[in-house]
Length: 76
Image 1: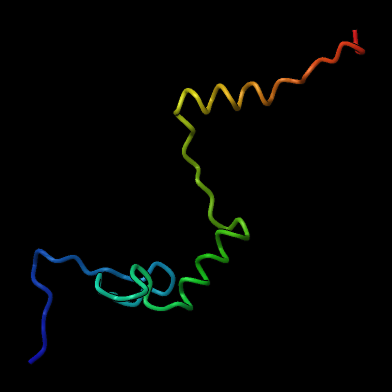
Image 2: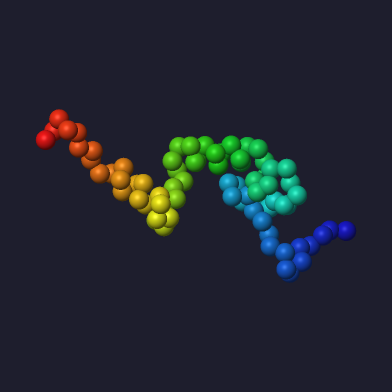
């Protein structure tokens, strides 16, 4: 007897290859360790980027202070 997904259940797919995965799988959300390594390689190579702006005020303050050139007493 084959199990069909109920209407309320979402079909989950491996983000690397698109194979259907089950949440109980050892490699979830991936279908295999190979797909995990492919995804890790994409992060490491810079293929994935987070494009949303930083909205945390503390992080923004640290970033702004790091961007400003530091003046030395010798430069004056």
